Image 1: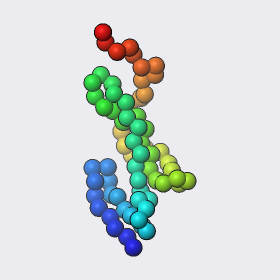
Image 2: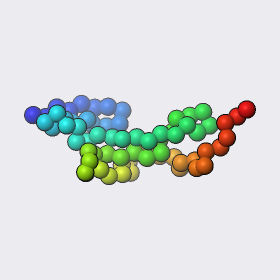
Image 3: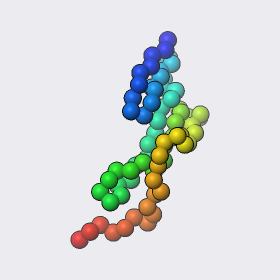
Image 4: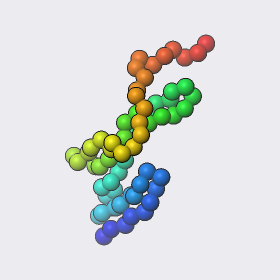
Amino acid sequence: MFASFETPFGEVKFENQVNNQALTVFDQWQNGELKPIFVFKGVYPNVELAKEFKTTKMEYPKPNWPK
C-alpha cells in the first residue's frame, strides 16, 4: 500500500508504513538564525546526502556566547 503527500521539503511517500524518502536535517544556530548544515535522504541503510537543498557551512568551533 502506498500513500504520499507534499511537504515544504518535497514529497513524503510511505510504502508498507515506512517513509522511504525521509529527510534528516542537521541544523545549527548562526547569527540568530537556524540554518541547515547537512540534509540526508533515505532510510538506513540507503542514506545519501541530499545535494538539492541549500546548506550552510558549519561553524566550528562555535564562537563564544555573548556576555
